[in-house]
Image (cartoon, rainbow, N blue to C red):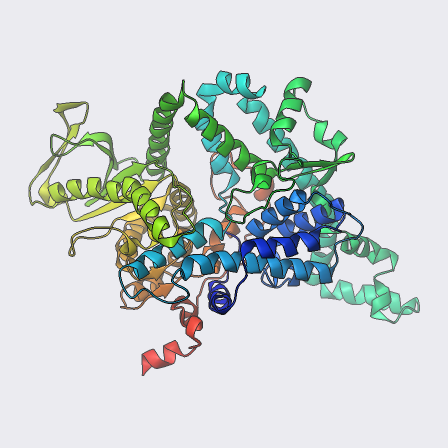
Length: 627
């Protein structure tokens, strides 16, 4: 998922405004450094942590008024802070200074987007280059404008699945094992959660008690009045509510501030523990004197442990992400084992996808791997559910950061796209053609093409759908295949989806729909195909959530010839169910989640938002449609 509630309407309006007048990145960075220079280190870090902790309240909090991508912008701010050589550290972060900093962070982001969106001195090219700019801009915003986050269980699964066979190599490089690194991550996660619960649970419990029992609140306030305390502003200082007042005084960012003693209080061999800390440690000297560019990889994201005095901050979410990406990169680049690791990882990724489908469909479903239908080509996965055939190609190809030059960026984006989604579609299409040729089809063992695994009768083939599963999220060019996919005009689009989104969808379908889930998944594929070519969406889970929450409306608008812009609140259903247990194997905190209630989430979505007409100031879509 992406930064919560990214406001594309506001971003678009700011983009148009910034087009008329914008400074260079370097000029803005200098101003940002000047604002950050006098701030005390701990004050800056507590504020940064608060931005992470309160992200769920983004829509109503003034903290985020000027930020479109708060997670990525906060990571960037910390890196810029430590690039300043002559920090004076004389003042605390306050509201006025933060607003100035936030506006500069927003200006930097918009300047990047303007550079990509308007390369021709602010004018259109009026030729094929305009389409290239459109593709590059949407990809650039998706890649850099949002911090890409998956569920922690999914990253942990990757680490165990891919790294465990290389544990000895990893230990020789870094001085710790995979299990020890995971143990440390869980330790940090636990102390963060314990502080959160210790500080805020009493407040929430007291608030919930009185909210659900207004008579009790009435009795308590009458007691205050009987004591002579009639001013409601003074009630907070009474013994019964003093704990609430103390909690309200605490900066939420302090949850992530720990003593070194707390950090070291974990059952890991001391030398190995120190190597783990060194691995995650933020080297403050590494960025000094440099100009930090927003589109570059953020050092803080991969090194989320910052030590200052006898204290430290440690972001467990970025810790597990950093562990995965840094070790994965090292293994792939190693001259001795890189190729072997890549092949093993590809095979393990295929196994993961196969497991998802086997867990989702009933036992009587026929599922084939490494199969062949034409006597020549090998294919990945084939599912026969009742009279529906689902062809699945699995691609672990990665995706390189796009260039700022939109024309050059387009060429790179297209090459990466062709190696993953386009190739996967073409492989699916070859199987589609065999299945729709009006003949019985022999499903062959790809390793022994003389061996018939199953004979599929032509009369039992009703619907044929293709899915291309990727390990990486490609953003808008994946959710809307009409922008880049090459296909015959009458051919159906495949559904291309990242494995993390596929897993979340299948888990939630099983949880919400029980035995109806497989049939609804087939229905989803049908209506999802109709949206291709006319949907603007950065996160596939928004489309999936829309279907799960408002199925009838989803089907209605999939059948209409209108362009749809999805909104982030469409995906809120996934986090709501994650709160009570989504269904991951070894799901974290599941013993606590069993006692939680399902939070409210949006289940109806306004068409004005979905058609994107806010971008041009129109708000009467349904009225016009009815006319």
